[in-house]
Image (cartoon, rainbow, N blue to C red; front, side):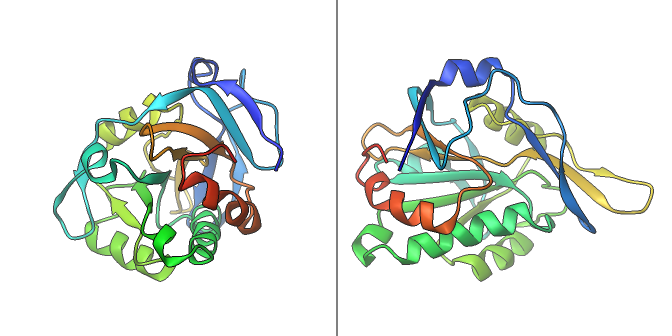
Length: 216
């Protein structure tokens, strides 16, 4: 697989990655223009200067506090910010990752943690988030909580999100970066970035290396 190396600082300097607008009853569309972002690649972008894992405590799907750093330490982690009412990008991304995870040997599946953080905490309650993720893969962790806390954590790893807005036709649109960031089990740092068009096959090829903390 071909990868591109860029610095995390360069990505963060762009403020946010391209945001995707996801509405309840309409297709996703492009929103904020991309600035100083990495060149488009077939799959992963390896960062020369990885992102630090956010110091984030939110509520999981059982209603209990969940500490991102503590509860994922030493594991390969894929983090995605999205929401359950998204009609296309979010479910497709989670589905692709679920397919790839199932292709791993059982021992390696246990070394991978997929974390879905909602960008629409007002509607994504622990119960609704849990039901949605269970249909994707029961091992996926769903987190919800205070929007500003979620937004700050996303921005700390270069991903922009805006509050969900209700439009005149009654649909709700949530603007959020549609990237997946992979964290190494060796360093606990985010070092590989995947775009929204990453296929299940691409994740399937990369996950065996990611769970070992290797470059894809």
